[in-house]
Length: 433
Image 1 (cartoon, rainbow, N blue to C red):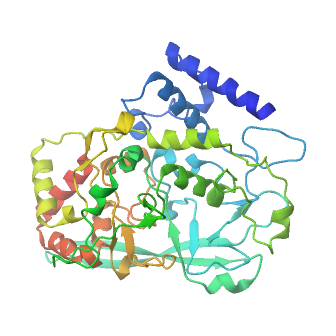
Image 2 (cartoon, helix red, strand yellow; image 1 turned 90 degrees about the vertical axis):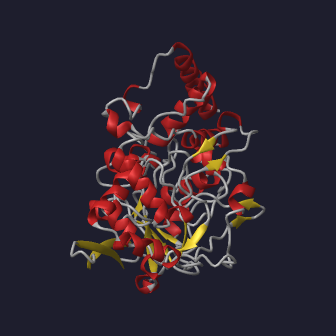
Image 3 (tube, helix red, strand yellow; image 1 turned 180 degrees about the horizontal axis):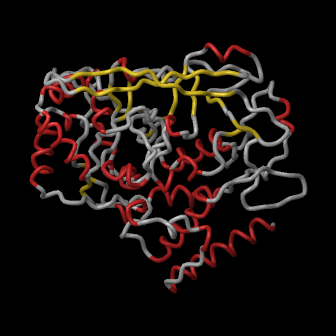
């Protein structure tokens, strides 16, 4: 009862502020203290109505403010953290709505175990816990250097992550199991990607490489729907992705995942008090998903600059646009996102990226969804400690390109064969996105 009353009071206050143009968030508005460059991913889409903007702000509040452990006799809006977890807030991983701090910068370590989940742990290791509950294990990431030299003699030092698991609380089998690190991506443009017709994506799929061009993108089905979100395109909607993150990363139950993430052997986890049933309501979860769906893609800096134009032509010439497609439509019946032509630089398909990026936690270990590139030139402005690729290993866009293999090997090799000036032009193009 009290939670419901508070929810509608918050909603009324935010709607009022949206209608009057007066912000009422104070310390809870994580944008107020940020410089313009670091705010690049935090703006609402310009097509939102006043009421939609109010809903955006409600979602922002629940996205940003941390959850706290539940306690008997206490009734709070954001209690129910854990009992085991990785981070206490969405914004702890999606820094200023962008990418997570990379593992080499002390970011949260989201570690997925390969293959079948051990009964005592589940598929993802929770390395933090509320008082009275043991964390599942400790996860550390080290990096092994792999020097690379271009034909012109230019040297780049790549780094490969190596993960070690120690202090297992419920049996040592997880210490030697293979697994992989995941690093949270930026959230811009999700609503636009959700509005791309499935047929437009499937039209680019060529799983058997029937045309012989070496590119065999595959559409992922999630039940009857098209998988669009997550590193493996394993989620069909932003709502599904948000609910999964609440459960696996924060230990917050929702209508989509009503059971606590406490495997049977974890008795202290199972006995810990909860923050309600569920801990985040359908309305609040939907508001967070709406917020994530309506974060605007920043405008490009100077797309007509000579180096940028030349870089875009080279990006296409070496073959990058075979997967990073520059143009996709949105369905006309999709409200504020409908009837647009968007430029996400993705095909939303999964592609074989070669053994260098193999993910031991995936059924298709070398397959990854083509990452959207819009906004990629702002990543380090929004968060200087972010990395690139699924595990954050790459410190620069150049390093990320050099890790490409599999279906992208030919394009990567053509990039390597360019002279340093042309390679710099491609990077200038990416920086402009």
